[in-house]
Length: 330
Ligand SMILES: Cc1cc2nc3c(=O)[nH]c(=O)nc-3n(C[C@H](O)[C@H](O)[C@H](O)COP(=O)(O)O)c2cc1C
Image (cartoon, rainbow, N blue to C red; front, side):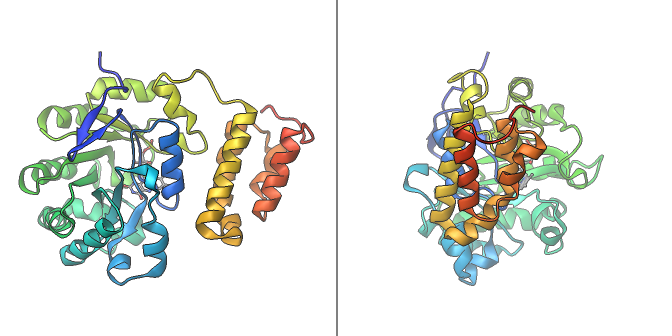
């Protein structure tokens, strides 16, 4: 039986195991990727970055989205866009900033992205999609991977057909498949049988995404589909210990002390990344994940999830670790 701990090769890079952090918009910055790797992830994809933002030299896109930590190589930077010439330049800029691979988003169903012709709308434009992948490779000289969905709407297999073409005509190094239709957004059962067929058919590695919310589901999907690797997404938020557990490096949930120390680490990194004030606002979406991992009751979690500043969040963690915060268990 295959195990998640076996090394594999992606775009010429040796990846130490088969567990990967998925690209997560607004979340997958350098420190979230670094955190996943500290806890065992073999690879961590960046959040999606606008190819237009890079080409037009938007400071925030360059300084924040392309920020890479020296300990996270090899790192794939995910780009989105619809224009091959812009993609060529953006991929070159990502390479100059230290990206080791370029991943192209062809699965995002969000209206703001789709209406520009990027993300999942590329499933209906295979010629453009192939041109984008080629341009990214030519511009950067790096291996290119693509993340896509099975199709736009139920019954369609445009994503599967596109995956074949990307492997045959664009020389992509891997395909990440989220076997849900774009119209399903992020709910409904992923079609793992479809993923298994694609794994059988393609010569390049296939990374499986979708529905891997529990350790059992991740192991079962890895086994059932024969995928080269599996991607944790929502299931890893506030719980990077899942990587360690799935790799057999630990048993059980983290202790309260471990979660508190981890969240302190996250707060510090966010301040380093964004400055104290912006970090306070940015982290508000992170706190509920950690409150859930801590098993806090809704009322007990409130001072954390509504913490206006990082100082308030730290004060809460101090009270919790000294036993002065109210009842813990959910
Ligand atoms: C908040 C959020 C942000 C996401 N951002 C991206 C992204 O930037 N690029 C991408 O390819 N997929 C993105 N996805 C999709 C995930 O990578 C993943 O394919 C999806 O969540 C299914 O996995 P799951 O069911 O295990 O969560 C995002 C998903 C969520 C929930």
